[in-house]
Image (tube, rainbow over all chains, first blue to last red; front, side, top):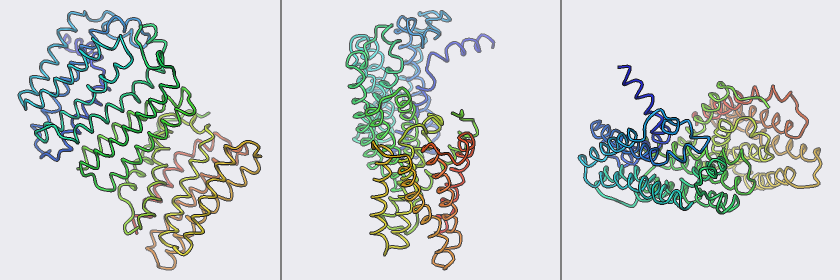
Length: 286
Length: 203
């Protein structure tokens, strides 16, 4: 029992629990927003289980591949791999096992759902992390594509096919990702420079980065409102969605026109809250 | 600057949730323009509450705080005037636009004395606060609205108080010490929102 507890404590930081939880919520929200009989707890729990395993597995594989740059960044050098708490081989095996279990479970539920879940892992691990992350700052586009896969997967399972609302929700997340990641990469610019990872602030400068953040926030908000309208949110909830979206928009514009460390990090935190709030609305009110 | 305590954060979170509830619930029978005016007021309250939670009281150092906090009474009073005192809507809407622009100019413009900025704030906040305070109470006393609607007036009194405290603090002439203002602010915002939500529920 003590062995399991120790292993759990070591493995848990490998899945970036907050990020995994946020992506998991988008997937569940995508599923529940299809007005499926959500009291079918068997399916709902299977969505939670399969997505949790797939997202966690994907994150573990990223941790395995990025262990060298994690060791060079102050923010990440205490993670289990760079600090030597666990071996790379063990993490690779764990990542393959967990993501394999997630995809397998998803395929067993519905082949199209499983395919979208697999696409999420593929874009995240192979295209984003292994192929592009160390070559170009534009890699975040593919990080965004993979970030949009859980919500698309949820919608796909609920409706039985890939439809426009699922795609719009995935695009909303794709455009939300820069708000989230670019504000983060501005805050930890020295870390990324030390690790040799190209970021928008280091390649194009702060001004361009802030304009991209503002632009992507506008597009993300508009897409989220469009999806909410398409899903059939009642006027009251739509008003709330608009208010939350305008809040993010104004903060992004404020961050672009009067940039400061505080506004920048405020936007980063608000963007996370925004996504959580928007997804909760989609989950609970249809 | 005072550090935000866990209690402050909880009070602000409840304020935000109440504001979100009011946005969703709307106000029964309110004309579309009033409904959007109320939405703007509660929306500003919600987003401001979230920003306070995220960024702490330091966010109050921004020169935009006075401008943003003026939107709440102006839009709320505009909604009330449109719904319950429609004959005065046009002149009041003109006052709202001019008052808002005056606040923006006196806060962001150069060559504006502190005295001028403070006086503008007192006039604009004072009139909007009085409308929110008096209109629901008069309507309730006349029987034109349910008695509980007077609670909106109580909210109006609290918003006037909060606006003045913040406004004078930002103008460098605080009525109370900064520490005291920041200590009561989350509770004041919660009570104000509670009064508004309760009052509108009687309509």
